Amino acid sequence: MPKTWFITGASRGFGKEWAIAALERGDTVAATARDPKTLDDLVQQFGDKVLPLRLDVDDRAAVVTAVKDAHDRFGRLDVVVNNAGYGQFGMIEEISEAEARAQFDTNVFGALFVTQAALPYLRAQGSGHFLQVSSIGGISAFPNIGIYNASKWALEAFSQSLAAEVAGFGIKVTIIEPGAYGTDWGGSSAKHATPNPAYDAYREKAAEQRKARAGNPGDPVATRDAVLQVVDAEDPPLRIFFGDAALKIAERDYESRLATWREWQPVSVAAHG
Image (cartoon, one colour):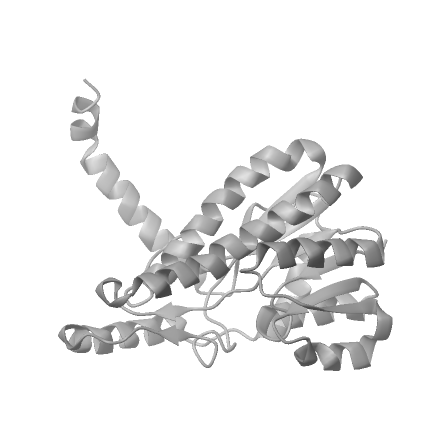
């Protein structure tokens, strides 16, 4: 059966690739972007299978309206993709209050608003699947993008709780955690805090480390088949990495955490009283 998708941030990157993947196999897509003109190529290619919608996910009222418009047009929502977001660069000391709030407004509250707006429709139909686009930075954390990491950790946390809360309604949740990909995430879509000269030397080191982690960036087009496998799975995973390097990063991080927790377990037990 064809599925109906609601995808935020569909004008480029993963959002656009997944919209194309869905449309090419005959699904319908409500595609959102801050500027709907960036969706014209999808409309020209796929016609009325696409509903282009102007949406800034920071605006809760606009989110509610967009989700309703999509449901009114297609009659149901099967896959809701929270993809809209951006990277905020800067050491923790460098991040302004406005930058921190803006990062959370888009990456956390935007996803929350879309999730809350879609849930009544999914509950009523007794099915549906949320795809929450996180990052390897959603389970680990790296210098110079700490506030971005924090936003993705928050997304991961509420999405894991959500999965338990909605399972009884037949609704599934998958957190997608990409590694490095050849998208514009670190380019024109990224924002940069005003640099503090005290961190200049470490900033260069952090950039080298990031380049080493990225290795050979993945091809966004290759994620099309992967995302379709996830949404078509009878029992999809709560979490899945996209890319070949993320698992190694996660293994190193979690092995280190477990070793430290075990080393300090006598202190932890003593603290119980």
